[in-house]
Amino acid sequence: MTASPLTPDDYDRLMQANLKRVFNEREVSRRLAAIGELYAEDAVLNEPDASVRGHVAISDAVTALLESLPADFVIVAQAPASGHHGIGRMAWSIGPADGPVAVTGMDIAQFEGDRIHSLTVFIDRAPD
Image (cartoon, rainbow, N blue to C red):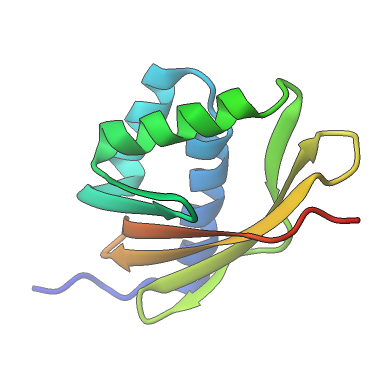
């Protein structure tokens, strides 16, 4: 039996949850719990300079990212995620919650069922 295809709302719900519960979560135990719910066991995170596999390695990569950012920076979606055929995309920005955007980018997620099997992160130039 194959899983039902994801709906447009599913792509947005899952990718928004990934931003909020994984990439904005500074508490490691909560982040790992979210990764366990949102990602396949052998999931891969592809960033411009590295690629890691597995829940702990993904959490460690997010820890490194968050530690490199000022404490008041958050990652927010620029629009609802969209997707089809198991591939979703979401544009995002990073910066202070009430301040200017420091960096923009896009996540491309490959889903197996309702779990992220791979997440590829693209980072744009910082705005002028």
